[in-house]
Length: 588
Image (cartoon, rainbow, N blue to C red; front, side, top):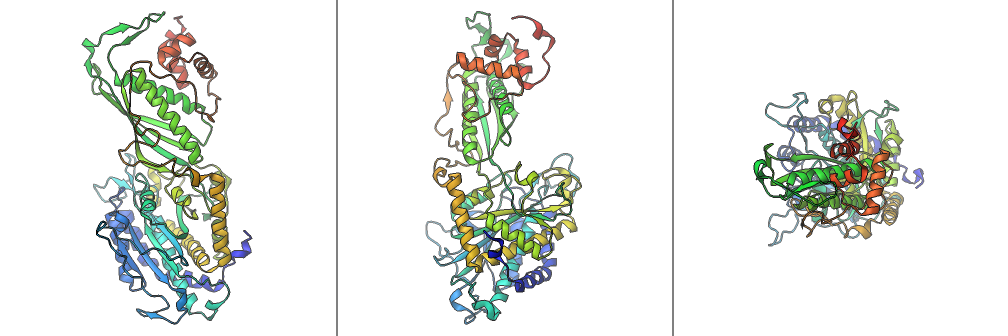
């Protein structure tokens, strides 16, 4: 898209700036309240109320929907303009801007509160507000009230502030536009315009936007806009913002291995008949299942090419050293560049978890602990418009930064939104004294006056993009065309059904209905999933993996040891990339 096609009418720069200046202290109070009262996912009650109260107090321009879409801490604030009224209608004292009707409620959904659907000729711009916090770490400076075990170490208080300011100033610029005689020029579409501030809870761990998607909160959206804080760009610390960002697809899995408890004194081994005299227990040891699976997935993780990643930790490995546990539990975080790559990687991780359970004779339960986050598709015309508008405001902004745009490490449920409607998630930079998001020191910096001022700067660009999408036919068309082309290239539409998520404690799409119970050696490991790099961090591991594939051997510690000539301890050392213990020099 030619940057000139979204040329912004300079007359509306001033109304946006005036609006933010007018409401600066009120929004600062909201920001400080949320920062000083951090709340974890699905419990953001203070944040919900302080934002809704603010817009209720502003008057008839806004309709506030509390506890929207069936979610206790979600909300919608909506303002609208009917294009057929071009200055002719007065509703509640606002020229041409009637207040929307209350949504209809059905008998089957008595608690479902939401705005009415967008008409076919309508244009809707949504500003997302995030406000959930992170659990406190032991090193976190005590910046919150005593007894609070959460902190805004990801700066979601600033996301809310920027979106509140952008939504308000976008609306007030539209009102100013309506009062201008130039409102009837060729750039004005014959469409009803809607502006919404959408409160999206539980981004950090609950996938709040995914629930809102399923409830219809993004239906009919012409654009969904938001911005996220981050540390200063190390290549140019003078930059205030970044237009085009990216994020990974991600999934969190919890695996439970169920075996048979026994005391060590009665845990008698029996021979398996192997030529080297190796022994295996006739008991179903849940810890063995976990260790076998953990080592196998650690080997897989070493062979992945960035940005694909697999991380895991043991949540429960037993209760006493002299007791064989009947249940163990581990949790894994899986990330990949695209949703398609994530599905393949999740399938391979799940397969290795099941093989670990099968080898130890245990039952394996793989659970999605959170709905899948899809990779972010940043709409390029929206990002170009943002970059242009920020320059018009005199705010130093980059369109792309390779160290950020080309090297994503984070994941967000805004990614899911971007596969449903045109979306962007700009970044604005705060002086975090070298700390990164989710680090303890970042929390303190997210509450500074300077960080808030930078959020307000970013809000100006977001507001300008909102006005532009609503009133500029050229930009509106370019945004839609780019979105449709992105879906065609990524294959998102075709894969939506294949990657249906199962929330909470339900089984994942790849594990649904596949609870596995089998005896020892019921499954074999035949190497990495298709498309995963076979380049190993250690040559020995690669050789062992190739040997395993050739002989279709079970991926177990004993199997690796037999084929490699190493001891069990030596195999573990090779897999983990550490020096082998002295006993490894012995020939088995």
